[in-house]
Image 1 (cartoon, rainbow, N blue to C red):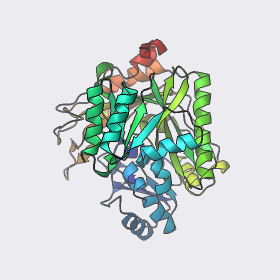
Image 2 (image 1 turned 45 degrees about the vertical axis):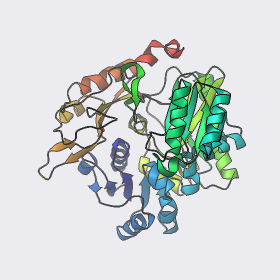
Image 3 (image 1 turned 90 degrees about the vertical axis):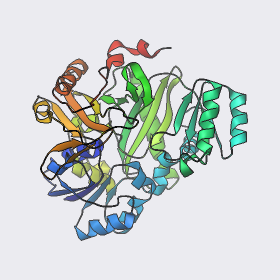
Length: 428
């Protein structure tokens, strides 16, 4: 198999690392890739939101499967164009990707199919939205409808912050993404995610995962793309897990009922409320950094699994998972998620990766022509460790982190700490 992976972050490095382990895979191309994927595959310069360019490359290079990592190409309909060209694609078309590309569409989909979620209303003008805020009060959640690079969601604990968030959306800061605003009920409880692979009919669930979005210790500071993650999630009860599974099955069935062909990953973001798990959002792809703890636990042939999903024959496979825990710690550039410096020399990766059960995924790196590895992003590396239990996986991850360094590097030292202390940690 010859495979093209779109994307250049830690998620894509994890995907590529699993793909090249398959005996069926002969070549992997990554657009644009990073310093880590360059050691495993061929990085190529390709406009990944241009479906015609991706399809042309796939045909010219004899690609057997295209795997789409980020959300932007999915929302742009790249999967549709490549499929029409006759190349199998792992990733939903534009219709399915609306579950991530439009929070209003996702909320309406949840309501149509009776999926548990919080109350919400959408607005396309400023004054009605402000009037609704006065009606419902705070705390409240304000969301720009479209993709806003992770910056379009505000959890407002006071009225001033809520009004400011609504005004910001309608100010044009987020472009078209903010032309519609969703005002959503504030729900309390720990958050976790459940990802499933589906071909539109069969569903292969993964273990629950829990990300850490805040930049600093004890969940303080601004939101980020994720500072660390682990899987499975010890605080999720069996009953909650069953509810989450049932919700995702119902979502897949709902897509089929609406004649939306969905072949890829469906990501359900949940909050564990006192009334049971409720959906906060959908994503239409593998999460980042969630993928970096999911795929190390995958016991099957990823290339065959993704191709089977792309071709609608997932039911033919028997997919298994390793009975181990995984913890991943993000190493970030100083200043992230705001302005940060790049081109810092990175040291110690080989020593860290030599530890048993440890893999270092590159999220924002580049190689110089001379072979020096430099930082090239806000989130630079994902240090992932496997262990027989949560504590040992976490200890091993931080042992590896201590061996790596670059100027300005920072990380959270409390990834997984709340989960180890138990459910009461999240109670208000």
